[in-house]
Length: 275
Ligand code: SF4
Image (cartoon, rainbow, N blue to C red; front, side, top):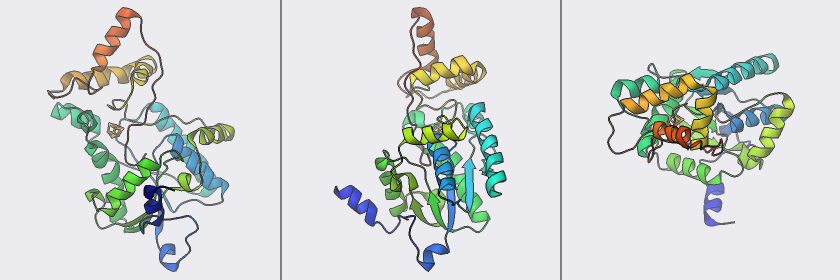
């Protein structure tokens, strides 16, 4: 075991599913639902183990693809029928897309910052928790068994009090998929066996999308693709070439058309803190 892993396991901010002290029992379990494969797989894994967190909550940037919204609606029906619960959906008053258009800019990730997810993912959830008096919690995050580095970064930010959005919330972090050693591949298989089909969730204009994902968007959701291009064209940022950061989505897709290039590979994680 390396030092990083040892420190992670010993951190006072990490929660393990078998913790049984009276202090831990008073914490609300809050499942930060991301909408994609890991979150969906974790939901079904909780169900299989006969447990469902107190609160399930999804922060909607307003920019998910229609298949993700349809997936959440279907899951909510399943959850309600089986557990009498639903995923609570929270959002900022202005969508991230509208904000970028109004300010003639791109999501902060185009410049290498995560403030778009902090403002549109973490903030609305933290606001909802404070407004509803849930300030002593276990925050459940669906990083899979191969995402230890992301979990460690998330822990470091809580330990150092860096996440200013979550002020006044006393939290421990629980990474059940790491604890249960569940890989994304295994989760996908389980999801399909239950009769659901989950895919990666992100804003349809996310700068972390690879070329293959942009091509998929253009083919399956041409209207959303055009909206993303309108955002890119309207941006006044001078230190980035476009939504691809070092490349322009529109330029790349035009190249495809001219030279008949392009494949649909390249699905990557965007690095959102809650994903
Ligand atoms: S999905 Fe991408 S654009 Fe949307 S909030 Fe997350 S990092 Fe920002």
